[in-house]
Length: 198
Image (cartoon, rainbow, N blue to C red):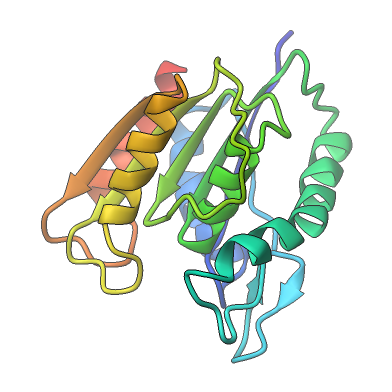
């Protein structure tokens, strides 16, 4: 029987527990799906919580290399989760759900083609990866971003949509007029429906 796993990837300065309530809510309508919400591997040096890569001194110019440098630690986290839960990437369904920096890492995993992902849901993220982009054609993507986001501009999701569609990826996008840098109730419902359909 095909297993289905959703791995939740939190934002910078947060932790896996932050997205667990969302996972618990989705589980009520998706009881045959396994939800895992790990901590990122690095301590956040500017406060409590964790991060996938350091944002100290980060710029648009150096961010892609930081994302690339974070791949090894990210992959260890993901591979451990898959192994611990008996997930076979070749046959089971793997979905990454990210918020902010977690979305950056989820979209990087997709764009680099490192995993046979069934889908990615990226809240308030950006595609900030080093090329070449070689996403697997069967992967589907849902981008959700608030137009009132003061942390990562919503145009980053629009740019990701355009670039991924040009590569043949099935991409949907939801732009929310009054949503800031957060996951709204409407966005969470849209994501749940997207995952359920898959």
